Length: 279
Ligand SMILES: O=P(O)(O)O[C@@H]1C[C@H](O)[C@@H](CO)O1
Ligand SMILES: Nc1nc2[nH]cnc2c(=O)[nH]1
Image 1 (cartoon, helix red, strand yellow):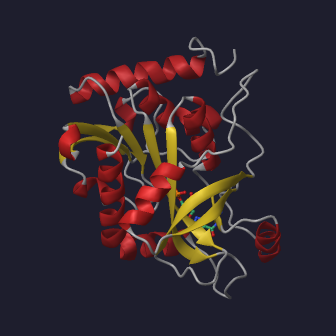
Image 2 (tube, helix red, strand yellow; image 1 turned 60 degrees about the vertical axis):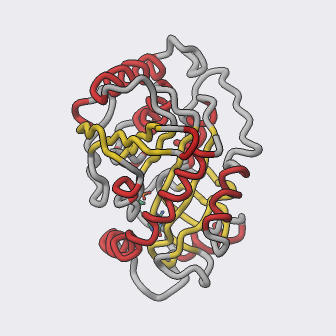
């Protein structure tokens, strides 16, 4: 059954998870969802009052991530969005990566659940390799567009979705008001879990990639298909293969994320709060 049919398995699973989430948190709906990638885990603490934390294993369709640097739980935060009054943010610390082998529906489940719970905006964050030597590890970069090089889609059947302006110009404008030094780039999602060869990075530069990772693009497609406004921001955790002579490791990704965490947590919290105030 096509994923644009509410009766599809994927959408039914998301509906079930959303009901369980809202009941566990004791709220009527979610206003904005934020998926935390490597290095972004401290943002939740700066958003407002945590009113619930739910383990991924207690929600249908979620998985405790096997990837270090991902918390394995979802949090509901009540934030004071100015005159707009209290808003609820779902912080998804339990992203499923395509390379974890649970299938593409599991990758999209978090954003579909957020949409089913009422979220109109999704903020996708990640840790990634940088192809631009001027973006040293620790640099946050706005996602302007993406290259989905996974060879798959979270959508199936006659579910034709336009992606021409997928990454919200409005929220990118908010982010650049918060921090005018923020650059923008094209994010390429590869299947992983291996990193790229220098030859592949050279190819990716040729086809227009500025950032390379293993998440985000598939989630963004599913979020747009669910009618959400999508914003993405990457943390460059390392120079991509061959850009420097250094070998790559997930430990390096974690360490770069930890070093940048306080600064990018504050940045992300300001972007989210302003977005809620202006939504
Ligand atoms: O969830 P993200 O995309 O931040 O996780 C990063 C990218 C890979 O999944 C992994 C490789 O180090 O960390
Ligand atoms: N594919 C990919 N994902 C990453 N996540 C963090 N760094 C990298 C990288 O260099 N390549």
